[in-house]
Image (cartoon, rainbow, N blue to C red):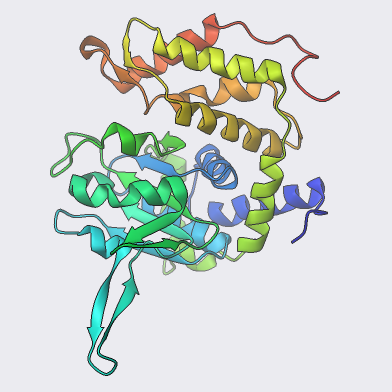
Length: 323
């Protein structure tokens, strides 16, 4: 795929990818669109919810629809960092140590129940998610491009779970929730699984080359100086709010900007508008904030972010994009 790819063709592929994933993930259209938004914006995704609501199915469906090499690790307390990064094995025939790549050497990596493993193992993901590389046994290895991490976690308080450190949370563009299906959607799930695995019906709708082309197109989406100021003002408000102990980092600022460019692209625009920014603040900010003890829950974070969005001055129409 080349740079001459038209916006209409990109829109066609986006719609096709979503349609394929929807074959396996029933009734979660908004969530599917957000996961794809993060992927084309070069972001990583954390999906938090109870077991059995389709988090793993979501990741598998995207790997098939995007034709990406895929690996999954079920995170348990005995998983080691070397299981992810790789290790050297002595070969008797050559009398040399040969490096065996770990599970992270793929294009889409699923870290299943990431909050059930040790902090040492979780830390093996930090370099990967930030720099797209792995340092193992003194050597740095560049991972395949594109490289996406989709992690799932059970709610804090579930048996065997622990909180992810702030440095880990900050590397996820979005934290999303699946939620239970409606009655009608659950009936549809039962019907689609009658003598059939819905994942078997998911067909490739794109490939790595096309995904890279979309990511490059997203990076070229125009952001006006007034939009940059709007984003920086929202971030600054989180750092000075009385109920917030730790506000949004510059990494979070970049994640919001990238996500807004991705959203504009998915909506057929080559420029970002204020509505893109305001609509993504909760998804990008909520998991990054550390609230004061009396406000420390997800609902409080959502309300605080919405209050901040409502209080920060919005750029005037006509001065926030290409005309």
